[in-house]
Amino acid sequence: MRNHTNTIIASDFFVVVTATFRLVYVFVIMELDTRRILHFNITQHPTAEWTLQQFRECVVGDEGYRFVIHDRDRIYSRDLDESLKSLELTVLRTPYKSPQARRCAILLLTTVVLFSTIRSGLQHLLRCRIFLSEILSRGITAA
Picture 1 (cartoon, rainbow, N blue to C red):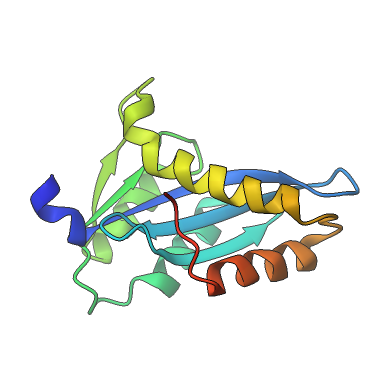
Picture 2 (cartoon, rainbow, N blue to C red):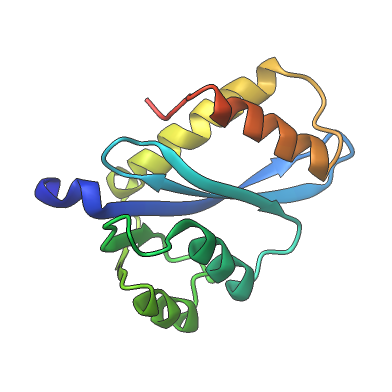
């Protein structure tokens, strides 16, 4: 797998609780080799169709990505996996109960949580998006 890290992307969702106690879901696509954030977006109601659109916005075909790693969350339906094949991506699902396989996602989440606790008050969806854009524009990647 190490020989192919430049062709692998990983995706994951994590939850952010706003200052008004609303839940928003942050979807992130990360390049495994460089741990660079390729794409992120935020929604209150993630669906398989919405998730597929995020992949379409990120993977246009000329990047050379061949594999996508994601967990076994229900949002990644069989239909979504089939649609990812149309983007010429082979889906690699993380094994059950395997924390090592989720290491990159955990590192990314830790980085975002650290910076979000430093900044105060994610009051609504727009602020959360602006905040994450600011973090990512500074070139902060998972350790």
